[in-house]
Image 1: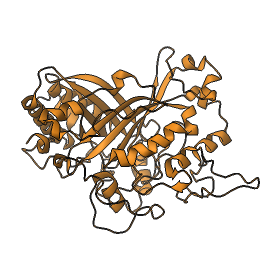
Image 2: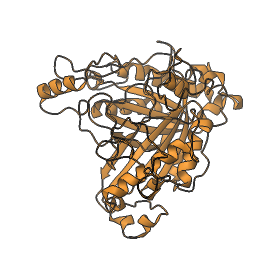
Image 3: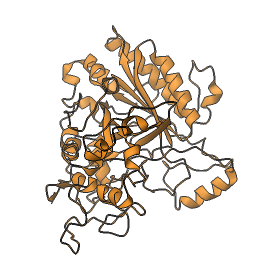
Length: 446
């Protein structure tokens, strides 16, 4: 379930060279959601619509930069106050995503190039409960405790999530500043984390990202716009009977049937902050790294295949009679329930960002309980960078989709030697605002 990408640094100095290389890297790019190079050799003018049946920032192709901001409501904020807050945030997010400075923007020039800016709102239990207990989905709260968790309380808090993404880091930071100006009278910051993926134009469209471990990550994601995605993420149908992943078959309809009516058109988000112990990972050789995930590092192919998209053969054995793809590797644990293929609904959509931060002194790196981490007690303080993933998992039904997969991975997964969940939050992602005058959350409070 790991997913993410290495740090990207935006557009380089050679704009003309980037324009030509990026254009060649995106053959047949007719998808309006894909970023494009404009006549000036930049994609800063690209705009993603804010209004619509679904919020942007879920099915939207992920831009290069993201900042996640979790807010807690101040004492005394009631439903009326929450409505005022959400109206302010929605109006300003709508302007910012279209390259316009909000009314209170004293630097509107910084908003002119949105670079595919999206602002996605997530509601926590505290915010939703202001509309009444019946409005709260039963899954909206802390996940079950998993034995691999080393959670920090400060990273598990929040009533309102802002997920702000763009291909330009300045567009993200300016949008975050404007939105926090709106929110400061109503909320306090619980935690925030900036993260990134590959910069725009670095890879051809459709390339699977690599996480800081160098592994391709997210190969099995349902493709946006497909029937699989519609059923697994939105809990609805795209009107097709053709599965995106023929090996898994079509997921069932009605995965969102248990959600309250106000959430129709929305989805559920599990956001996990996963620390990656690079010091102990550096000591693992290449065969051990491939063994742990079940894929080759160079091509991302299953250990039984030649290309990344080859279907893994979990029953294949080598000359010694051992399975080629180990039963305890990450891919096998995510895909198999025992020795059988897990049900088709046990899939999620990963929209993951990585962070790698250099610090000025030794940083505490949470150690797993595995032997690799126990070999060197000094590794806990040897790192001078903080590396991890903001693992965003979108699904219509957390209990039927996310939890069975996470339970298997928490029990046995070779990658647990090097990864430690330190933050965990669950959010209801409401439907989008319908148009000017509407706001995100009107289906809940309206």
